[in-house]
Image (cartoon, rainbow, N blue to C red):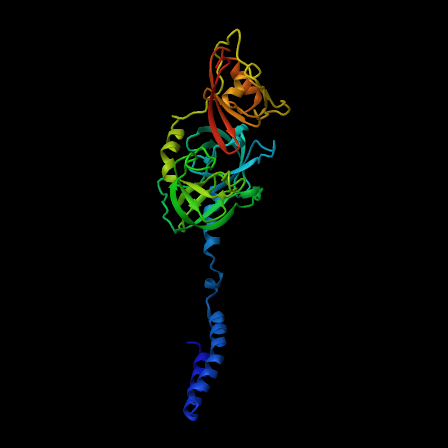
Length: 364
């Protein structure tokens, strides 16, 4: 015990023996002792205990495994950034599948400021994930055979480039939260707009911010628990929910992409029909092609057209035609040139934060 505290205790005992009002003096002694306890404890505390920062230590371990991704955006209010994580020593980056990846290649930036070119290797719309290949030698990454699950009430930490705050060699942000529950995330169950309908961790932390999707959710040991989901809003109340897709549920899809079982298809050089389908024949008016790779947004729909009957709307983003990726207007038009006007086509579109598959034809 601190010598100062021992001395004060002895003096208090002496006072008590000399006076019948012992309780009164003992009370006064306690009032004097308490501040000394606080002060002495502080000065006697080891320096390493004072400097101990569990969250800071965790951040320093996990942040190098998280990357900042910059791609297509800045168009119609869309952010041009999101987050990803290294999952192999070959520089494979797991991230969220979104319009940001329509740029080829996308820019991948480490927490040390190293810039890498990320090429889309494959994606799975069912889980809304994609994998980028950077061909970089990486020493720090998330081991997929050393992940963890979380339970309700467990403390978690989310690392992401929310709001695109981190640039250059700046590290991503870290947030502390709690797993509120693990349950089914089903867009048809309520009024939430989202394509992914599997299991999800609902988090008691504001994690689903612009640019945060694709970030890492880890436990206290730094083990990967899940991937931060996209912004998701209740249409009726406007309430934003924060969730993560469990990494255990993504492993099979990740493995298929890495093994080449799920590939990115681009338009092939097959023979073109004499009368191909076009967006105008379908009643779709596209935005002006003004940049190197203009995202294929729908600008308008002709009333009574095939597009109107199919339910297409202005501001829909066309992601695929018959499973073929269309990252820009030129790729969209090139793909349509190989399809006869009498054929029906299946479009994968993004409407807000929702993905939809729409079958459309001239004579439907």
